[in-house]
Image 1 (cartoon, rainbow, N blue to C red):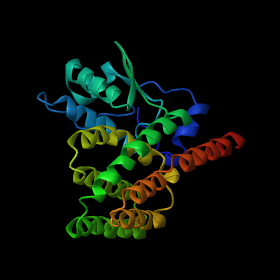
Image 2: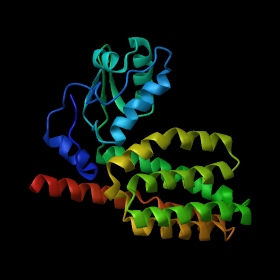
Image 3: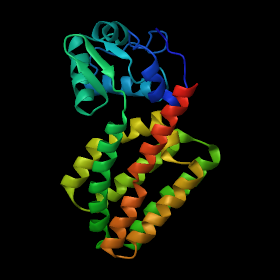
Image 4: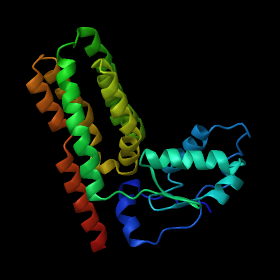
Amino acid sequence: MALKRTDSSAAIAKNKARPARAGSGLTKAKIAPLKRSVLPERVSQVIIQGLLDGRLRPGDRLIESDLVGILGVSRSPIREALTELAQSGVIDREPGRGGRIREWSKRDLEDLFGVRSELEGYAARLLCSRFKPQHRAKFDRIVASMRDAARRTDFLAMIDLDLEFHDLLWKLTDNGLLHQVLASLGQQFRLFLTLNWKFHGGLDEVADNHVRLLDAIATNDPVKAEKAMRQHVVVEKMVAALRAHEEEIAAE
């Protein structure tokens, strides 16, 4: 059953007012069957892309038998992919049946971005002692692309650039474990921001917000850098926006 595209910024709140839909939301008419040798990672990519382009929404069910027919693969890679997506927080697993696309709550948001604030605050402190001009040049190129995405009103490109910026920051800390932990949360960051871009702030503000963060890191003052990062990843602002949006939808 094909899905109708909806306003992605309202996806979370609308889910609370509608029953979960059965079926995958992916159809043979829109997705070519995958080769028999497909890896579970490829199955995961198909499901994630369905979320990003609006064919799947939070609360939708992913039924194993439907996915087998649509993707043209056996149950084994389907099950492996669903297990992987459950471990990364994208779906809630329903053993023996499939899964359900995760629905975000205020608590989920507080947990995810609260952890991000702690870890990235530490990352900013680490980067201070090794921040070099050539590093700044790499970040500046990403910021320039952010300004271009804002001019085009390209939300998906902006989210990709935001995550590229932070991934570079994590790598430059030279702390492999920290990078690994933050990267493991990257899929959840991407999906939340894609489905709910209005909670990320106006596009015109994104580049300047990242420049202020870079300026603080460039001072080589770890306390100042950590404070700037915590202000950059402001969970309270996103929670307030989510709550206001839920109230707006409930009043309609």
